[in-house]
Structure formats: structure tokens, C-alpha cells
Amino acid sequence: AMKVSGMLSNVGFAGFAALGMAYYRLWIPNQEIELIYWLTVISLLTIIPGGPMKPLYYIYTLTVKKRIPCFITIAGGVLNVAGMYVLIRFTGMGIYAVVWTTAAVMMAINLISNPLYMAHVLHLPWHTFYPGIIRNLLACSALTILFQAFARLYMPDNWLCLILCILLYAAAGCALHLAVVFGRRDWNRIKGLIKRRGARQND
Image (cartoon, rainbow, N blue to C red; front, top):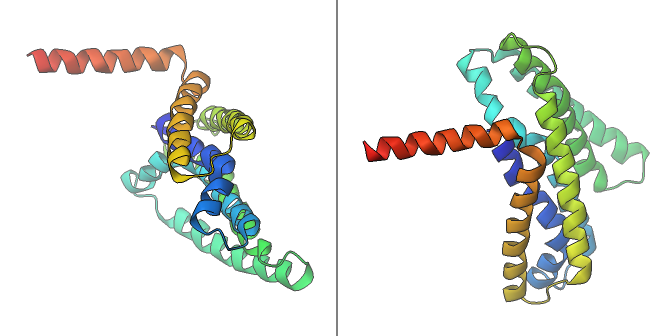
């Protein structure tokens, strides 16, 4: 579930990083495109570690362990507001302070507190979820580099070409993600699931 959810978030982030500028030029051509693009990219950074963690949030519900996650959420909100105030008050970051603070807090929660506490409530080793998270980060980096290379070769300038590029990037991104993140055991499990479903249908 982590690998599939991570694939969706990775392809989405890398695709927007490559085609977001073209999208905004077509959608809002008279606005500050570069500013809006970078604010969006920074905001989307949180989905990179957050994507594979999404299926794991049910752990808190199934194990009835909600108190600590609630405290972490509240503490993250307070830290977010405090960080924004400090950066806006004492630096020249301006509006970037808002998105960077939120991105930093959310990435810390998804990379540190959530994986550790989820492993704890399941009585698993502390590092249980980190191999999947690291593979997901590597896959997202590879996808972003690949899509940026595609965008340098050709940047769409109309809606039809943009849609076609999105479909092409999505297909290539899913294939690359599966190659990087899925191992032999994963493919064997998928084949087993397909065979069992086929057997049920035949019955």
C-alpha cells in the first residue's frame, strides 16, 4: 500500500515540477507565474514523504492509539505558527516563510514522528518503515530528474499538448517507479493475488 500510494504522489509531484510552469502560463497567463509556481512546488514537497505514509494512518485508528498523534498535530500547528512569525518578523523571506515553515513541519512529522510511533504501536523495530520511505524518496528524485529532462526537450504551449505530455509522463513515471520501488517479492505477491482472483472468478 505504501508503494502504490507513493507512486501516485511521486508521479504527481514530479509531473507538476516539470509541467507546472506551462500549466500556469496557460491557466493564468497575466499573473506572477514564477512566484505562484515556486510556492506550489514548495507546498507540494510535503506529499513526497506523506504519500507512502497515507495508508499507515489507519494504524492509529485500528490500534486505538490517537492521543500521541493528536499531541503531535497540535504541537506541529503551534510550531508552524511560531516558525512563520519568526521568519516573517526577522528575515526577508516574505510569503515564502509561510510555505517553507509548513513544509518543514509536515516533512518532519512524516519522516520522523509518524514512522517511529507507528512502528512502536505495532511492536515492530523502529526502522520498519524506513526502507520503503527511502526507496520512495529515491524514486521521486529519479522521476523529477527524468521529467525535467523531458521538459527541457519540449515544453507544451497549448492545452492539448499539455494533456498529452501529462499522459506520457504519467505512463513513464509509473513504469520507472515500479522498477525502482517494487522488488521481486512484490511482483510475486502481485502475481499471487492475480492468480487467486482468477481462480475465484472461475469458481
